[in-house]
Length: 127
Image: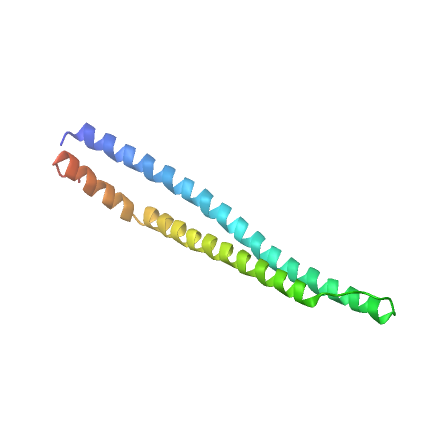
């Protein structure tokens, strides 16, 4: 294969790998950010619920009539927890896959795959 064509393919491949790596790093950062927010949301929700019941118990202890529907709160909490954890699991799995792709881009595995594809397309040994 012509040396100039090999250089062009090498440069193009490097640009593609660098571009993909940066795009995936951005996605990983965004996923990490939203995963952290979900974890904060779950913790904040728990704190709010504890404070809610504590406040209502205090009001009740001061002989003010308060109707506390514990079963409604329990059902609501279970539904929220279930949905948020499902979403969190989905995001975590996606982050794992993206981080794996970044690792493969950085360790040269993707470049080797691209070279093999180029060799199949051209019929020439690229390296």
